[in-house]
Amino acid sequence: MSIHRTDASQLSPKQSWLGEKENIPDTVQVSDTDSSPSTPLLARLSSSTGLPSLPDTEPSSSPRGLAIRFHLGTVPDPSLGPDGHRRLHTDIIAHSTPYFPVRTGEEFSAFFAAVIASQDKDIPSPTPIESFLASHPSANAFLNAPKPHPLGFEHESFWSVTAYELVSPAAQVTTVRYQFCPVAGAKHLSPGQLKEKGPDYLSDRLRSTDLRANPVQFKLVAQIAPPGKDVVVDDATVRWPGTEDPESETLETNEEGKRAKVVVLGTVALDALVSDGEQESLQKRVVLDPCPRGVEGVRPSRDPLLEMRSAVYLISGGERRGGERGCGRARDGIAKLPADGESKGGREGGNRGTGSV
Image (cartoon, rainbow, N blue to C red; front, side, top):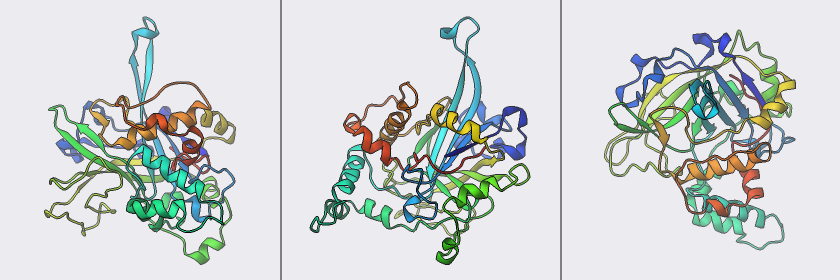
């Protein structure tokens, strides 16, 4: 895993996440924090599975992951002394497919248990994983969804798995899902082109790029849940009617003729690569969290995956440092997740790839 960073002293509109207020409707203006012209970022780009030696060219290296930490400054904290301050940040974690295999933590655990139980080639059909997929169409759709290899990280799209709630100063709640859309456009390799690539072609491409002159850029997009009683906002396996390209004129509609509105919140520019000497330290220190923190007016939805994913990231991070994290909303089945299986199974938790900010 590589992580890229932009220090606050180096920020300019080109090098940071921008959210111009006049371009954001009132329904997604959650507080005065969105008036800042730029925000320093720390980001991680990664491949799937968490296996450091897995080549970028392997089918199982997808979906890719993009995790971004927004550094929001400091606030006074009397518990740290008369002049004490604590740093604020919040994270968005996404992967390169709009699909997810299961809805709950218990199903996620059962999914990986079925995979492990099906490793023996002598197991008769239906194997445990075949039985699981037959009873969970969403898992089957996730596994069979196209996951082409990108030309580079700068040409990949990323979706947040779960929904979030944005609360305006007038207490109006808007449910959204985030998406990162490549400014350079989505571009993927043909099978023939992929055969010519090396095992580390994605990170090699980043290292060979002058990121100051050619930063990796994404539009940060909010897909707003459309109105209608048939729209599900607490199930990551249910895709909202909408578009995978915010500039597309062809939008799906639900049964009531409603469509998800897409709002471009700003631009993320990844313009510096953390040195190799800093990589190991950051990998041990940084524990990313799918639950939003530190931003007034941004809160987790009722999707049960949020608490599960936060717990899985804690399991992984707990091996590197102490601390407790959670959304503050108890969910059934979280304590039952096997630490070893889930820490290895986190789709965005892979420790291989590159990141930039």
